[in-house]
Image (cartoon, rainbow, N blue to C red; front, top):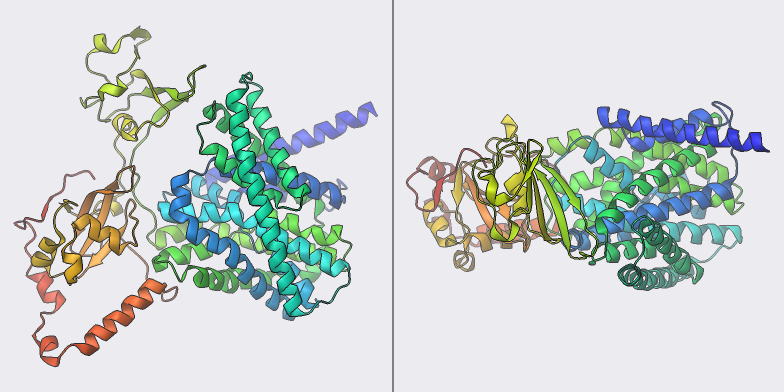
Length: 634
C-alpha cells in the first residue's frame, strides 16, 4: 500500500512537471497550451505508456471542480469597464450564440453520423462553448496587443457561455437516458423554463455569494497565508450551493468572482497571485485527466466524419452564429470575423462529452470520441492562426507603453492603499525630467544600494528604485511616467496619422476644410463627440472613423472613456483586410440611407459635385487651422 502511494504520487507529479515544462515550449512557439496538455495525457494513457484510467465519474468530478476554480479566477480578473464595454455582444454570443451553434452543428452531425436528432443536438451542445484559457494564452504567448473591445468581448463570452452549454448538455442527456421522445414544442418549452430557473438561481446565489465573500474577508482578520485558501473554499461553496438547489453552479462561481474582484476586497494583490497559480494548476490537472480518459485507438474509425464536423464548426456554424448574434451591434466586419474565428473549443467541450458516458447512453463513448477529435481540430487549425489573423485583419494596435518594471505591495492595515515599487526605465518621462504629481511623491528612493528621501535625491535617473504609497485606484498616469518609450513597429509608424486634432474643436471646421459630408446635426458637435457618436457611443484607443477624404484615429481616452487625443490621416493608414461578409445592422442601415439620399438627389446636384479624389488632391493640410503637425512619437 505504501509503495503504491509513492508510485501514484511520483507519476502524478511527473505529469504536472511535464505539463509545466511544456508551457515554456508553448510560450516560445505560440503553440496552443491546451493541445500540449492533452497530448501529454494521451501519450501516458492506455495507448501510450499504458496508464489505465477509465473512471468517467472521477474525471467529470475533478474536471468540474477545476473548471469552477478557473471560472472564479476568470470573473475575479474581469474589470467592470471591460464588462460594460462588451456585455451586450458577449452575452448575445453566450446565449443565442450557443443555441445557434448547437442547432447548426447538431443538424450537420445528424447527416454526417448515424445519430438520432436528440443525440446530434447533444453533441452540438457539448462543443458549443469556447475555451477562455486557450484563447487568452495564445494572445499572451504571441504578445498580441489586441483591440480592447475585441479582447473584452471574447473574455466575457468565454466566461459566461459555459453554464448555458452545460445546462443544455445535461438536460439532453437526462431526456435521452429516460428514453423520452418529447414533441418539439414541449421540448423547447421545457428547455426554456429550465434554463430560466437554472440561470436565475445561479445568478442570485453568485451575486449574494460574492458579496458574502467580500464581507467575510473584510470582517475576519485572517492571516495572509490562510486568506487565499479561505476565499477559494468560499468560492467552491458558492458553486456547490447553487448546484444543490437546482441552479447553475458554474454561473454562480463566475459571478461571485466578478463581484469580489470588483469590490474593495482586502489583500487583492495576494488573492490575484494565489488564484493565478491555482488556475494554472486546475487547467493542468483537468487537461491531463481528460487526455488520460481518451482512447486514441478508437479514433481512426471515426476520424473522417469527425474532422469534417470540426471543419464545419470552424468555417460554417461558428461564423453564422456569431454574425447573427452581432448584427444588432455596430462592430466592424474585421472584428466580427476575428471573433467568429477565435471560437476555440477546449476542456469544457471534452468535459461535457463525458456526460453521455455517465448517463449510460448507448452511443456515449462514440459522442465523446467525436467531441475529442473536434476539439483537436479546432486547436490545431484555429490555435496556430490567432496571431497571424489578427494582424491580417488590422486588429493589432501599437502598445501604449513600453517596458514597465512595477511591483504592487499591499501593507497590513491599509485596505485602500498600496505600495508601488517602480524601477526608473531608460527613456521614461521621469528619467527625462518629467515632474511627479504632488499626491504621488515617492516615500523612498534607492540608488546604488543607498536609501534616501525623494527630497534629497534631486532628479531621478535610470535604474533608481522608487517606492510610492498611493490609493489602490491610482490613475494610469504613474505607469505612463515610469514606462520607457514604446517601440513602434515601422509598419505602425503612421498608425495614428501625421496630424493631431483637438477633440474640443467644432466638427463644422472639419466640414469646412475637408468637405467630409457631415449632416447639419453632426456639424454642431465637437470633433470628439462626433467620433464617439460615429462609434456607437463608446470610443477606445486606436478606433478609426472614415469621414469622406480623411480618417480620424483615437490616440487616447481618459479613465471615463472621453477622447483626449485624435489623429488625422488623409488616406487609410491601417492595413485592414476587406471582409466581404459580416455586415452589421448599422452598416446595413448606413447603406440603405446612402442609397435613399443618392436616389433623392436631383441630377444637377450630382453633376455639380466635386469628386472626392479631386477634393482630396486639392487639400493642403499644413496651413489648415483644424490640425497641427504631430510629434515624432505617438
